[in-house]
Image (cartoon, rainbow, N blue to C red; front, side):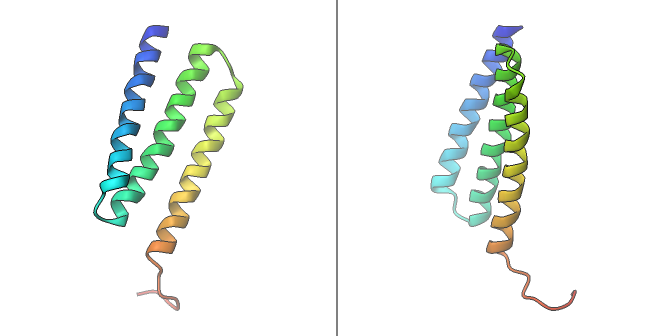
Length: 90
């Protein structure tokens, strides 16, 4: 099972490389935002896989904190990119 987890982590690293290409080339800021969200989600999954393979339980805590930071960063970026304009609902 350890080999499977290692192969899964390698595959996830390849998706991060694809996301890096999208960040560098992505024509719109929304593309870049989604690629950055992919980094956070994939990084969390890799940390969970490494925690399982190496039997390091503290990596699970680190992965959960990383997931919260990723979500917070995405919300902050979206609010900065698309401001609501203030005052009232539509």
